[in-house]
Length: 550
Image (cartoon, rainbow, N blue to C red; front, top):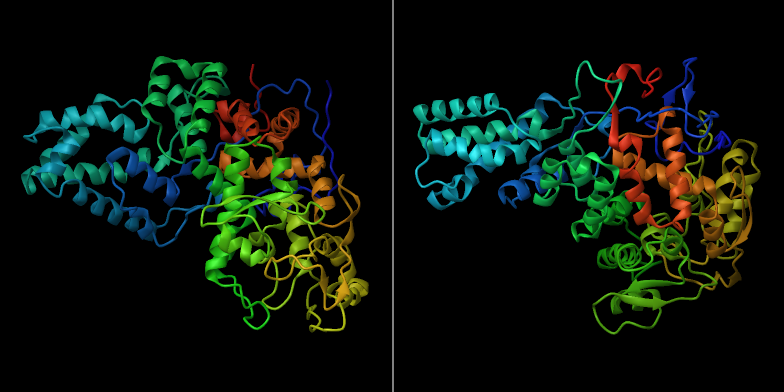
């Protein structure tokens, strides 16, 4: 079936950032949805595969699973890259290389601290060349996540001997460990392809095992995944799907999915959100922490224990709370500290969109901010681009006025010529949430005045009028543009880069799978692992526009 994908130029480029830009043949910038792409008979186009260095979180998990080290040595990395998924934005610097060296030295010292630790590491009572070779033959393929050659073993055994001669056997083992932990084969997810093979090649079993494990668990493959790579089980799509579903069903997958939603919803903003104590005296850091737990508990309840539906996450008339958080919100239900499902008024509440974790962070210290809340809808949920603020324009928000609503006070700047273009696209989206104050608590009125939560979405297939957050949420969930945006957010997590033109047909197929599944987030994730972008790579990364599989 012929398919072209055209979306208005306003959409599908925003919060995914400047990285969500590629080039077309005439050299003009490209953003998803701005250029029509036909998807008939395009062959395999897996797109660009950047070299991905382990994030700090991935590093810590990998040394934990490889050596049992739980001290989180990557916390010492001064660039603090936890949660950064874009390979293009992550550069190795001399200072960072020195930090990796320090982390390797500290880790090796901990693993060889005494006789018991050395025996647990090497499996030997007496550490000599034969012992080290046997240890490396067992553990080096796990560290490098691929088969290793005899030459690689020889070099490390030679390094051990040199270290032993300079110091002692313990010093020799430490040097070997430091070399492994600073090796590109450990620090990077290296995917070498045959130099004279086909222009598009399927990844090897070990390369796919690595992709699967870091996508679902953020760490090295487990023993079953290594075994699947060794046996050839990952040489078929069916084998890859079986492992994807197994990994997704394991408890470790929740942590990775939670990390995605933390980035998507910017939950870290709760760590430094403060409120005016005279206006919102009940809000404090403990409540902020509970708000984050509320969102995490709902993600867990829906994705891992419920129907997995993005629609449920976005539109549910219930949430997860414990007694302190329910008291803060002014609702009844839970009786203790454990988080439980709490029914809410569906006329006002809409899943995670009306959680305090979103609404309190997108507000001012003393009042709501329809601008910030509207930016979240247009930027994060719709990936929309809003025109830049004109150069030299200074915008001062109107002062609080106890005789007017926030909507009334913001009316003037929506009419001002310099402000109208942006704020007519943003403010109406934010007004949907005006039944929730600046600290995320429901309010039936503002300053004794009725709240007008109506608005209109423009410039997207979600266009139309709505009244309140639930109606807005339904428009967003029913929007192909919003589903495309959500898929693109996951694309960046899966592949370490933003979508580019070569990916258009693959992403469109993923969206179709997402819709066909009833918007099941789990099926979307499995779909990523069955895409050409996941299973294949272009041998010559500089020839992407000409590459087509035979």
